[in-house]
Image (cartoon, rainbow, N blue to C red; front, side, top):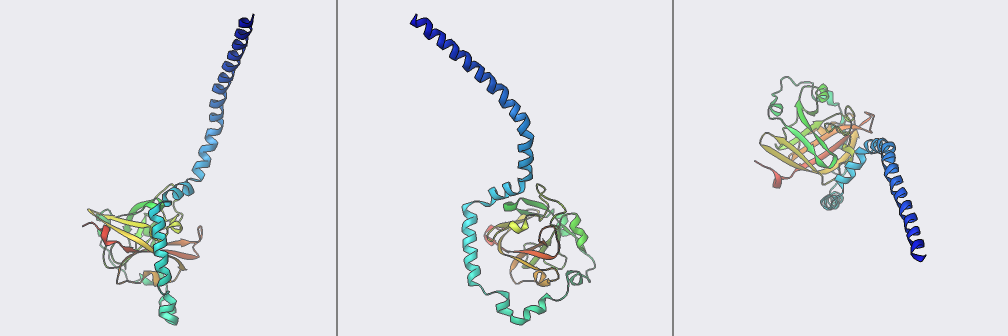
Length: 246
């Protein structure tokens, strides 16, 4: 009698377990069908922040950030060095600065020159042209500046929101670049790695960011705040000769 009772209990429990498993097997696929599109849309909408955050969290980035912040604290500001003269280099406009450009040798395009910023998922071709309409094609090499890798200030200007992530040929995320990040320019069989030393906002007619330099420098420029063209965001980086390939 005891054995029969135990067997009955076992069969009941087994039957209940089968029903539970069957219910799970039915419920889980249904949930995936319903929630799948919602999860996809949520992840896609937050792709920019999610991927950017993952790329920017690493020990090397943190150490660079601390190091360059320390150097910035020690270095004098432009106002401290120039005093009232700083106003002089901010007169004029970018359009006036390139008014006398005549012919351009498209050497960067012939060498398939590319700009890469891994920390913010930026990658695209650098184009040459006489005016800002060149930005409609991609990253614009400012015609009065030196070529990447040369001594001086190589200036690259691009749209902020003509394209948006996950597109990579855009400066949409340029405000998320941090001191110590790497900016790589690939050109033919050469590549130049720059290390970000300064991120700043200037007025839209401030041509100080276009001025030449005695250093091997690159300056990336776009509009800011996002979705406006009120000011300009400038990212300045210095050539890391240890990583320069020849």
